[in-house]
Image (tube, rainbow, N blue to C red; front, side):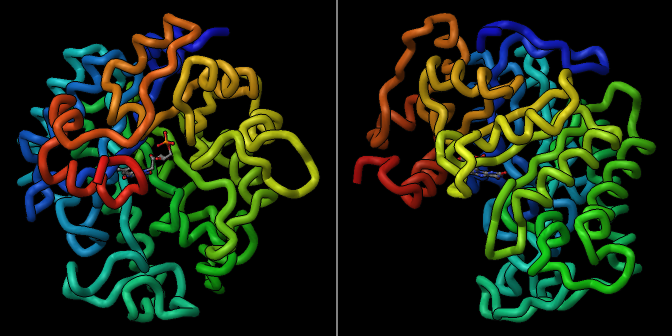
Length: 360
Ligand SMILES: Cc1cc2nc3c(=O)[nH]c(=O)nc-3n(C[C@H](O)[C@H](O)[C@H](O)COP(=O)(O)O)c2cc1C
Protein backbone atom coordinates (compact mmCIF):
# COMPACT_ATOMS: atom_id res chain seq x y z
CA UNK A 1 0.00 0.00 0.00
CA UNK A 2 1.20 3.49 -0.87
CA UNK A 3 0.34 6.87 0.71
CA UNK A 4 -1.20 8.12 -2.54
CA UNK A 5 -3.64 5.20 -2.85
CA UNK A 6 -7.31 5.51 -1.97
CA UNK A 7 -9.08 3.79 0.91
CA UNK A 8 -12.71 2.89 1.42
CA UNK A 9 -13.61 4.06 4.91
CA UNK A 10 -17.25 3.02 4.85
CA UNK A 11 -20.60 4.85 4.95
CA UNK A 12 -20.09 5.64 1.27
CA UNK A 13 -16.80 7.52 1.76
CA UNK A 14 -13.55 6.86 -0.05
CA UNK A 15 -10.43 8.69 1.10
CA UNK A 16 -8.76 9.69 -2.17
CA UNK A 17 -5.30 9.18 -0.63
CA UNK A 18 -3.97 8.39 2.87
CA UNK A 19 -3.54 11.96 4.14
CA UNK A 20 -5.47 13.52 7.01
CA UNK A 21 -5.02 17.08 8.19
CA UNK A 22 -5.09 16.74 11.96
CA UNK A 23 -7.04 19.21 14.10
CA UNK A 24 -5.20 22.46 14.63
CA UNK A 25 -6.26 25.27 16.88
CA UNK A 26 -5.49 28.53 15.14
CA UNK A 27 -7.11 31.19 17.36
CA UNK A 28 -8.91 32.84 14.46
CA UNK A 29 -12.55 32.39 15.59
CA UNK A 30 -14.65 35.30 16.84
CA UNK A 31 -15.29 35.85 20.57
CA UNK A 32 -18.67 34.09 20.31
CA UNK A 33 -17.05 30.99 18.79
CA UNK A 34 -18.27 31.77 15.27
CA UNK A 35 -15.84 31.11 12.44
CA UNK A 36 -14.02 34.01 10.83
CA UNK A 37 -13.29 34.22 7.09
CA UNK A 38 -9.56 33.77 7.92
CA UNK A 39 -10.23 30.46 9.64
CA UNK A 40 -12.34 29.23 6.73
CA UNK A 41 -9.68 30.32 4.19
CA UNK A 42 -6.81 28.61 5.90
CA UNK A 43 -8.58 25.27 6.17
CA UNK A 44 -10.11 25.32 2.69
CA UNK A 45 -6.63 26.03 1.27
CA UNK A 46 -5.44 22.71 2.81
CA UNK A 47 -8.44 20.85 1.38
CA UNK A 48 -7.60 22.33 -2.03
CA UNK A 49 -4.08 20.99 -1.51
CA UNK A 50 -5.46 17.47 -1.67
CA UNK A 51 -6.02 16.28 1.90
CA UNK A 52 -8.30 13.26 1.79
CA UNK A 53 -9.65 14.09 5.24
CA UNK A 54 -9.65 17.60 6.69
CA UNK A 55 -10.29 18.17 10.38
CA UNK A 56 -11.24 21.54 11.89
CA UNK A 57 -9.64 22.99 15.00
CA UNK A 58 -10.91 21.68 18.33
CA UNK A 59 -14.45 23.10 18.58
CA UNK A 60 -16.21 23.51 21.88
CA UNK A 61 -19.56 21.89 22.60
CA UNK A 62 -20.52 24.26 25.43
CA UNK A 63 -20.03 27.94 26.02
CA UNK A 64 -18.35 27.33 29.37
CA UNK A 65 -15.83 24.71 28.34
CA UNK A 66 -13.52 27.01 26.44
CA UNK A 67 -9.80 26.57 26.85
CA UNK A 68 -8.49 29.65 25.05
CA UNK A 69 -9.39 32.78 23.19
CA UNK A 70 -10.22 32.62 19.48
CA UNK A 71 -11.55 29.09 19.91
CA UNK A 72 -14.00 27.59 17.44
CA UNK A 73 -17.45 26.82 18.87
CA UNK A 74 -20.29 24.48 17.92
CA UNK A 75 -22.54 25.07 20.91
CA UNK A 76 -25.06 27.45 19.39
CA UNK A 77 -27.11 28.04 16.27
CA UNK A 78 -25.49 31.48 15.90
CA UNK A 79 -22.42 29.47 14.78
CA UNK A 80 -24.34 27.67 12.00
CA UNK A 81 -23.85 30.21 9.20
CA UNK A 82 -20.04 30.08 9.51
CA UNK A 83 -20.05 26.31 9.92
CA UNK A 84 -22.24 25.92 6.85
CA UNK A 85 -19.98 28.15 4.78
CA UNK A 86 -16.90 26.19 5.86
CA UNK A 87 -18.52 22.80 5.17
CA UNK A 88 -19.75 23.88 1.73
CA UNK A 89 -16.31 25.14 0.72
CA UNK A 90 -14.50 22.09 2.07
CA UNK A 91 -16.90 19.68 0.41
CA UNK A 92 -16.38 21.37 -2.97
CA UNK A 93 -12.74 20.28 -2.72
CA UNK A 94 -13.71 16.62 -2.38
CA UNK A 95 -12.18 16.22 1.03
CA UNK A 96 -13.90 14.35 3.83
CA UNK A 97 -14.73 17.08 6.33
CA UNK A 98 -14.69 16.46 10.09
CA UNK A 99 -15.26 18.79 13.03
CA UNK A 100 -13.24 17.99 16.12
CA UNK A 101 -15.57 18.14 19.14
CA UNK A 102 -14.21 18.85 22.58
CA UNK A 103 -14.68 20.42 26.00
CA UNK A 104 -11.75 21.75 28.03
CA UNK A 105 -12.84 20.30 31.40
CA UNK A 106 -10.13 21.15 33.92
CA UNK A 107 -8.35 23.08 31.17
CA UNK A 108 -11.20 25.59 30.79
CA UNK A 109 -10.14 28.50 33.02
CA UNK A 110 -12.52 30.76 34.93
CA UNK A 111 -10.76 33.74 33.37
CA UNK A 112 -12.34 32.81 30.04
CA UNK A 113 -15.55 31.10 31.11
CA UNK A 114 -16.50 32.93 34.31
CA UNK A 115 -17.21 29.64 36.09
CA UNK A 116 -15.25 27.11 38.09
CA UNK A 117 -13.84 24.42 35.78
CA UNK A 118 -15.47 21.00 35.86
CA UNK A 119 -14.00 17.56 35.29
CA UNK A 120 -14.50 13.87 36.01
CA UNK A 121 -13.13 14.48 39.52
CA UNK A 122 -11.76 17.30 41.58
CA UNK A 123 -8.17 17.94 40.53
CA UNK A 124 -5.54 16.53 42.81
CA UNK A 125 -3.40 19.55 42.00
CA UNK A 126 -4.53 23.10 41.26
CA UNK A 127 -4.22 22.43 37.55
CA UNK A 128 -2.98 24.67 34.82
CA UNK A 129 -5.19 27.56 35.85
CA UNK A 130 -4.55 27.61 39.55
CA UNK A 131 -8.07 26.52 40.52
CA UNK A 132 -9.33 23.13 41.68
CA UNK A 133 -11.97 21.66 39.42
CA UNK A 134 -15.36 20.54 40.60
CA UNK A 135 -16.37 16.92 39.93
CA UNK A 136 -19.37 16.68 37.62
CA UNK A 137 -22.56 15.18 39.05
CA UNK A 138 -23.98 12.14 37.26
CA UNK A 139 -26.70 14.39 35.84
CA UNK A 140 -24.06 16.82 34.56
CA UNK A 141 -22.32 13.93 32.81
CA UNK A 142 -25.59 13.07 31.07
CA UNK A 143 -26.13 16.73 30.14
CA UNK A 144 -22.61 16.85 28.72
CA UNK A 145 -23.34 13.82 26.54
CA UNK A 146 -26.37 15.75 25.25
CA UNK A 147 -24.21 18.83 24.54
CA UNK A 148 -21.79 16.74 22.46
CA UNK A 149 -24.76 15.19 20.66
CA UNK A 150 -26.39 18.55 19.94
CA UNK A 151 -23.07 19.81 18.60
CA UNK A 152 -22.74 16.77 16.31
CA UNK A 153 -26.28 17.33 15.02
CA UNK A 154 -25.33 20.95 14.32
CA UNK A 155 -22.24 19.82 12.39
CA UNK A 156 -24.34 17.43 10.34
CA UNK A 157 -26.87 20.19 9.63
CA UNK A 158 -24.03 22.47 8.51
CA UNK A 159 -22.99 19.83 5.96
CA UNK A 160 -19.88 18.28 7.53
CA UNK A 161 -19.31 14.60 6.81
CA UNK A 162 -18.66 13.73 10.42
CA UNK A 163 -17.00 14.50 13.72
CA UNK A 164 -13.86 13.51 15.53
CA UNK A 165 -14.32 13.17 19.30
CA UNK A 166 -11.26 14.64 20.97
CA UNK A 167 -10.35 12.08 23.57
CA UNK A 168 -6.67 13.06 23.58
CA UNK A 169 -4.37 15.68 25.13
CA UNK A 170 -5.92 15.90 28.62
CA UNK A 171 -9.19 17.63 27.71
CA UNK A 172 -12.51 16.52 29.21
CA UNK A 173 -12.97 13.16 27.47
CA UNK A 174 -9.34 12.31 28.23
CA UNK A 175 -9.87 13.38 31.85
CA UNK A 176 -12.60 10.74 32.09
CA UNK A 177 -10.25 8.13 30.59
CA UNK A 178 -7.32 8.84 32.91
CA UNK A 179 -6.91 6.85 36.12
CA UNK A 180 -5.47 9.88 37.92
CA UNK A 181 -7.97 12.46 36.63
CA UNK A 182 -11.02 10.19 37.04
CA UNK A 183 -11.51 8.87 40.58
CA UNK A 184 -15.29 8.66 40.37
CA UNK A 185 -17.19 5.99 42.23
CA UNK A 186 -20.29 5.98 40.00
CA UNK A 187 -20.68 4.12 36.68
CA UNK A 188 -18.37 6.61 34.90
CA UNK A 189 -15.29 5.75 36.95
CA UNK A 190 -13.35 2.69 38.11
CA UNK A 191 -11.42 0.47 35.72
CA UNK A 192 -10.82 1.33 32.07
CA UNK A 193 -14.26 -0.04 31.13
CA UNK A 194 -15.89 2.36 33.62
CA UNK A 195 -13.70 5.29 32.67
CA UNK A 196 -14.55 4.68 28.99
CA UNK A 197 -18.28 4.76 29.64
CA UNK A 198 -18.58 8.53 29.09
CA UNK A 199 -16.92 8.25 25.67
CA UNK A 200 -18.85 5.10 24.67
CA UNK A 201 -22.19 6.69 25.65
CA UNK A 202 -21.22 9.79 23.68
CA UNK A 203 -20.65 7.64 20.62
CA UNK A 204 -23.97 5.80 21.01
CA UNK A 205 -25.83 9.04 21.54
CA UNK A 206 -24.30 10.72 18.48
CA UNK A 207 -24.77 7.62 16.37
CA UNK A 208 -28.48 7.41 17.13
CA UNK A 209 -29.03 11.16 16.61
CA UNK A 210 -27.28 11.44 13.24
CA UNK A 211 -27.78 9.82 9.83
CA UNK A 212 -26.31 6.60 8.45
CA UNK A 213 -23.77 8.55 6.41
CA UNK A 214 -22.36 10.54 9.32
CA UNK A 215 -18.80 9.58 10.23
CA UNK A 216 -17.59 9.31 13.82
CA UNK A 217 -13.85 9.21 14.48
CA UNK A 218 -12.23 9.13 17.91
CA UNK A 219 -8.84 10.58 18.77
CA UNK A 220 -6.97 9.31 21.81
CA UNK A 221 -3.56 9.73 23.41
CA UNK A 222 -1.86 6.36 23.95
CA UNK A 223 0.13 7.50 26.99
CA UNK A 224 -0.11 10.51 29.34
CA UNK A 225 1.43 9.50 32.66
CA UNK A 226 0.32 12.69 34.41
CA UNK A 227 -3.36 11.98 33.72
CA UNK A 228 -3.06 8.24 34.37
CA UNK A 229 -3.37 7.26 30.71
CA UNK A 230 -1.36 4.06 30.34
CA UNK A 231 -0.65 2.11 27.18
CA UNK A 232 -2.19 -1.13 28.45
CA UNK A 233 -5.49 0.67 29.18
CA UNK A 234 -5.36 2.54 25.87
CA UNK A 235 -5.04 -0.75 23.98
CA UNK A 236 -8.07 -2.09 25.89
CA UNK A 237 -9.91 1.13 25.07
CA UNK A 238 -9.02 0.73 21.38
CA UNK A 239 -10.66 -2.70 21.39
CA UNK A 240 -13.77 -1.32 23.12
CA UNK A 241 -13.96 1.52 20.59
CA UNK A 242 -13.79 -0.88 17.66
CA UNK A 243 -16.73 -2.77 19.07
CA UNK A 244 -18.70 0.49 19.25
CA UNK A 245 -20.06 2.09 16.13
CA UNK A 246 -17.15 4.34 15.17
CA UNK A 247 -15.55 4.59 11.75
CA UNK A 248 -11.93 5.47 12.55
CA UNK A 249 -9.54 5.42 15.47
CA UNK A 250 -6.93 8.17 15.57
CA UNK A 251 -3.90 7.87 17.82
CA UNK A 252 -2.08 11.08 18.66
CA UNK A 253 1.55 10.04 19.15
CA UNK A 254 3.35 13.44 18.87
CA UNK A 255 6.32 11.47 17.52
CA UNK A 256 5.43 8.20 15.79
CA UNK A 257 9.12 7.22 15.59
CA UNK A 258 9.70 7.48 19.34
CA UNK A 259 10.56 4.38 21.30
CA UNK A 260 7.98 3.69 24.03
CA UNK A 261 10.81 2.86 26.42
CA UNK A 262 9.38 -0.36 27.86
CA UNK A 263 11.86 -2.76 26.32
CA UNK A 264 9.52 -3.69 23.45
CA UNK A 265 10.79 -2.08 20.27
CA UNK A 266 7.46 -2.17 18.42
CA UNK A 267 6.13 1.27 17.53
CA UNK A 268 2.95 2.63 19.10
CA UNK A 269 1.24 2.39 15.72
CA UNK A 270 2.17 -1.29 15.37
CA UNK A 271 0.89 -2.05 18.85
CA UNK A 272 -2.52 -0.52 18.11
CA UNK A 273 -2.65 -2.25 14.73
CA UNK A 274 -2.05 -5.55 16.48
CA UNK A 275 -5.19 -5.23 18.64
CA UNK A 276 -7.51 -3.85 15.96
CA UNK A 277 -9.45 -5.86 13.41
CA UNK A 278 -7.47 -6.09 10.16
CA UNK A 279 -9.59 -3.66 8.15
CA UNK A 280 -10.45 -1.19 10.90
CA UNK A 281 -9.24 2.28 9.79
CA UNK A 282 -6.36 3.44 11.99
CA UNK A 283 -5.03 7.00 11.77
CA UNK A 284 -1.69 7.78 13.38
CA UNK A 285 -0.15 11.25 13.76
CA UNK A 286 3.09 12.80 14.95
CA UNK A 287 6.30 14.11 13.35
CA UNK A 288 5.60 12.94 9.79
CA UNK A 289 7.25 15.17 7.19
CA UNK A 290 8.24 13.25 4.01
CA UNK A 291 6.71 10.62 1.74
CA UNK A 292 9.18 8.13 3.18
CA UNK A 293 7.95 8.93 6.70
CA UNK A 294 4.35 8.39 5.54
CA UNK A 295 5.27 5.09 3.90
CA UNK A 296 7.05 3.96 7.07
CA UNK A 297 3.95 4.73 9.13
CA UNK A 298 1.75 2.77 6.74
CA UNK A 299 4.17 -0.14 6.91
CA UNK A 300 3.71 0.00 10.70
CA UNK A 301 -0.03 -0.52 10.18
CA UNK A 302 -1.57 2.95 9.86
CA UNK A 303 -4.21 3.17 7.14
CA UNK A 304 -4.24 6.95 7.23
CA UNK A 305 -1.33 9.29 7.91
CA UNK A 306 -2.20 12.32 10.01
CA UNK A 307 -0.13 15.49 9.79
CA UNK A 308 -0.35 18.91 11.38
CA UNK A 309 2.73 21.15 11.16
CA UNK A 310 3.81 20.08 7.68
CA UNK A 311 0.29 20.89 6.50
CA UNK A 312 0.59 24.43 7.84
CA UNK A 313 3.78 25.06 5.93
CA UNK A 314 2.97 23.01 2.85
CA UNK A 315 -0.75 23.12 2.04
CA UNK A 316 -0.24 20.95 -1.06
CA UNK A 317 1.56 18.27 0.95
CA UNK A 318 -0.75 15.40 -0.16
CA UNK A 319 0.19 16.03 -3.80
CA UNK A 320 3.83 15.41 -2.86
CA UNK A 321 2.90 11.87 -1.87
CA UNK A 322 3.03 10.99 -5.59
CA UNK A 323 6.81 11.41 -5.34
CA UNK A 324 8.49 8.88 -3.12
CA UNK A 325 11.43 11.25 -2.54
CA UNK A 326 9.27 14.23 -1.58
CA UNK A 327 10.98 16.06 1.28
CA UNK A 328 9.50 19.53 1.80
CA UNK A 329 11.40 22.36 3.53
CA UNK A 330 11.55 22.16 7.32
CA UNK A 331 10.95 24.96 9.87
CA UNK A 332 11.64 27.69 10.72
CA UNK A 333 9.59 29.67 8.20
CA UNK A 334 9.43 33.40 7.76
CA UNK A 335 6.25 35.30 8.63
CA UNK A 336 5.94 36.38 4.99
CA UNK A 337 6.10 32.80 3.83
CA UNK A 338 3.42 31.73 6.31
CA UNK A 339 1.16 34.59 5.19
CA UNK A 340 1.64 33.41 1.60
CA UNK A 341 0.11 30.04 2.57
CA UNK A 342 -3.05 31.64 4.00
CA UNK A 343 -2.13 32.15 7.65
CA UNK A 344 -3.52 35.35 9.12
CA UNK A 345 -1.40 37.53 11.42
CA UNK A 346 -3.24 36.03 14.41
CA UNK A 347 -2.30 32.50 13.38
CA UNK A 348 1.31 33.48 12.59
CA UNK A 349 1.53 35.03 16.05
CA UNK A 350 0.21 31.82 17.61
CA UNK A 351 2.72 29.73 15.68
CA UNK A 352 5.53 31.68 17.35
CA UNK A 353 4.63 29.73 20.49
CA UNK A 354 5.55 26.49 18.71
CA UNK A 355 9.28 26.08 19.17
CA UNK A 356 11.35 26.95 16.13
CA UNK A 357 8.42 27.11 13.69
CA UNK A 358 8.61 30.82 12.86
CA UNK A 359 11.87 32.69 12.20
CA UNK A 360 12.15 35.01 15.21
C1 LIG B 1 -0.84 24.90 15.88
C2 LIG B 1 -1.31 23.56 16.39
C3 LIG B 1 -2.57 23.45 16.94
C4 LIG B 1 -3.03 22.20 17.39
N1 LIG B 1 -4.32 22.09 17.85
C5 LIG B 1 -4.85 20.87 18.08
C6 LIG B 1 -6.23 20.71 18.32
O1 LIG B 1 -7.02 21.66 18.27
N2 LIG B 1 -6.68 19.45 18.56
C7 LIG B 1 -5.84 18.36 18.56
O2 LIG B 1 -6.30 17.24 18.77
N3 LIG B 1 -4.53 18.51 18.34
C8 LIG B 1 -4.01 19.71 18.06
N4 LIG B 1 -2.69 19.84 17.73
C9 LIG B 1 -1.84 18.63 17.63
C10 LIG B 1 -1.79 18.14 16.18
O3 LIG B 1 -3.06 17.71 15.74
C11 LIG B 1 -0.77 17.00 15.99
O4 LIG B 1 -1.20 15.87 16.70
C12 LIG B 1 0.64 17.36 16.46
O5 LIG B 1 1.00 18.64 16.02
C13 LIG B 1 1.68 16.36 15.95
O6 LIG B 1 1.63 16.27 14.54
P1 LIG B 1 2.73 17.01 13.62
O7 LIG B 1 4.06 16.51 14.06
O8 LIG B 1 2.38 16.55 12.22
O9 LIG B 1 2.60 18.47 13.80
C14 LIG B 1 -2.20 21.07 17.30
C15 LIG B 1 -0.92 21.20 16.75
C16 LIG B 1 -0.48 22.42 16.28
C17 LIG B 1 0.89 22.51 15.65
